[in-house]
Amino acid sequence: MMATPRRAAATSAQVSSQGDETLAAALAMIAGCVDAYGYLTFKTYLSFMSGNTTQTGFLTGQGDFAAAMPSLLAIVSFVIGVFTGTSLTYSGTHRSWRVRFGVVAALLAVSIGLTPLGWSRGAVGIATLSVAMGIMNTALSYVGAQPMSLTFVTGTLNRMAGHLAAAAGRKPMPEGQGPGDSYLARARIDASVWSGFLVGAGLSGLAGSHFRIWALLPPCFVMIALGLFSECATPSPEKRITSSISGVRRAV
Image (cartoon, rainbow, N blue to C red; front, top):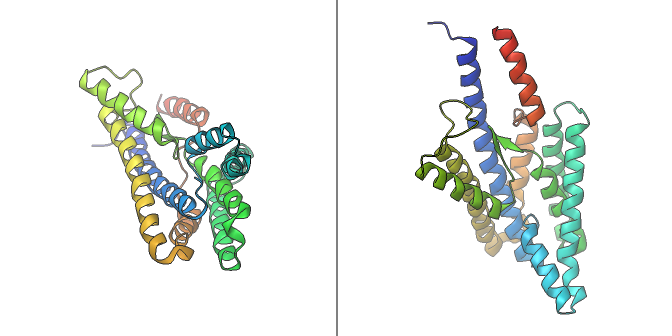
């Protein structure tokens, strides 16, 4: 039996969503790994800006402005990274997601290269890695129809609990994206992202206990591979809407 355009589009969207879910978990694992490395090395988070905001406010309130500077530097650098990554998205650069992955890999490599020289243990290391995490955070904004923030762990857990509550209450999904889309499926996506972050942090802690100088090598290699071989992450909502309209027109 020949697949109808609508069924073929639904199958393609489901495959794309599954690929993005795997990518989201992998990127969250890298974020967790780098974040744990930052805490072990600088006592500062490199992708978890909620913790840095709390730390900056707490230390500032105590009058210890010098101690608050690393966390504040990480926040500013992360914002610069998000600005850079988003600008690349809107620039129309060919395969901008690969450019972003490549830039993140390069920044990780720079940090690794500076470590033996002792230059990556202070402000340079914090700024370099926080910019990298900010750029990476822009690489995947959606998995299917679900908004995604790779480093916002509190938001991920909040969404997961909300989806589970909606599923338990048998609440209808107003904007379902096909038969595979459900509250339980969306909760699973959030759980995989949270688990990826947790596993990445655990692996970084294990590596940091034995060979901290090379703890950033695995994330760097993964980002290089993604930069060379990854397919496009989920496009922006505007592009998805345009693509859907075009698909409907072709089907008609």
